[in-house]
Image 1 (cartoon, rainbow over the protein chains, first blue to last red):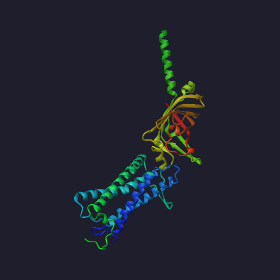
Image 2 (cartoon, rainbow over the protein chains, first blue to last red; image 1 turned 60 degrees about the horizontal axis):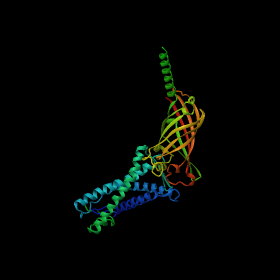
Image 3 (cartoon, each protein chain N blue to C red; image 1 turned 135 degrees about the horizontal axis):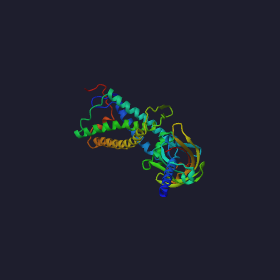
Image 4 (cartoon, rainbow over the protein chains, first blue to last red; image 1 turned 90 degrees about the vertical axis):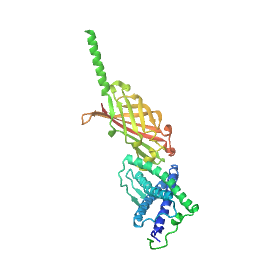
Amino acid sequence: MWRNGGDRYGLISIGFHWTLALAFVGLFGLGVWMVGLSYYDPWYNASLALHKAIGIVALALALAKFGWRFADPKPALATDLKPHERAGATAMHWLLNALIVLVPATGYVVSTSEGAGIDMFGLFEVPAVLGTSEGLRDLAIDLHYYLAYGGIALAAGHAGMALKHHFVDRGSTLKRMLNPCRRSKRRD
Amino acid sequence: MRTHTLAAVLAAALAFSATASRAAEYRIDPAHSFVQFRISHLGFSWMVGVFDRISGSFAFDPAAGPAGQKISVEIDTASVDTGHAERDKHLRSPDFLNVRKFPKATFVSTGYEGDARGGTMKGNLTLMGVTRPIAIAVKKTGEGNDPWGGYRAGFEGTTTLSRKAFGAGMNLGPASDTMQFFLSVEGIRN
């Protein structure tokens, strides 16, 4: 139930997927909203503080997800997919996996580029550990912006294809990510 | 014989004037020159910043009178530094300095009123693509031989600018239109 089994996802993998999906979409919305706020908006400073702290949580979750993947290998793709769908799904998963690390990581580089750490909801501080040159900082600023917009487009495509497989092809892909594997033993 | 003498005198005069004008030219020492600014934060306190990279040259020739004093400065707008990463990122963005579109700000003097100790340096400031005449109150801070074989002269200046006059950008509130500048420029004589 907790671990992946055979061709099914376990609760841990499903939890990582939906938490990171919520974080990615939520942080994107928060980011777009906060940069449009006026200087006198009550959320002008708090929105950025939240964006940074939640971003660090998302980065930690993404890294934990990869750690978990070594401990609990991913099940095979759904067997009802056609070859080009399998190739597309695999490419999409690699891209999204890269983005859930790169987008928060570039945000961290930008925010810590002058040596200040990141305040985590007033509880503790994540220190600035990178010596960031102006060139790296400017690259990170651009990457954070374009990868976030590119990532949200990819995520929309990913969600759209999942819905298409579910409603049009009547496939099992979406159900795999909603219902955890019930068997405690692996079928291999 | 007379023409030879005249030619010699002319040549000497030319050589002298060339030396004199060259001797009055200084190149700005970026390590000892600062463009600092401060702007009111909501009317409660000062937000202080500096442009880290400036370059240029000036002429300081008191013997030549006001016409002998000139300056031309170039400021790298992306070098704006207020000690806060996200604010500096925002200041470089199109909401403020728009450094991709306007990587340089320049000041080129058009005339000086005053004497060797101080006065008013007038000139054109180009900032965010807008060129406007401004006046800087200047004062000589010192000059003389430095310990490494060069000759230096330094000046300080103050001026105020209206953000609106240069295209403003993001609204920071009624107290934050006026920016005060403190300039400290040191040059090494060529």
